[in-house]
Image (tube, rainbow, N blue to C red; front, side, top):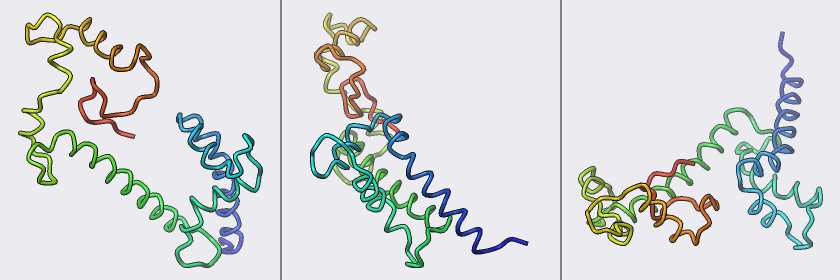
Length: 165
């Protein structure tokens, strides 16, 4: 028979472990500098346990919607889904800004098909209406200041507008 009190303690312990590993996970996903900057609230260049705890509470404290002092699997799932919806809204806003030619708040497949990339004319150095790999590489290097792979995310010159997170 499952002991409910023990189950809650186990879930709490797993959440604590997962959130304590979040800084490592965040850095592995390439967001370490943002995490560090936002968490280092006194701007001393170092993170205290208190700053990290405050950051965790800022991210996860609102997940306890029934205010019982625990985050259930259902609450965590809904909290995560809400964060994903916010990211999707932000992502769609950039996507629509790029492809929604008639600005009706929707992106028609015809708008994607007829999209005229603003970089194409400059990248097509020989003016033949086609881009070779060399032309694309040169244009991307020019756009990124020669720093290809610098972490530029979406909306860039060579993107097709779809950068999933």
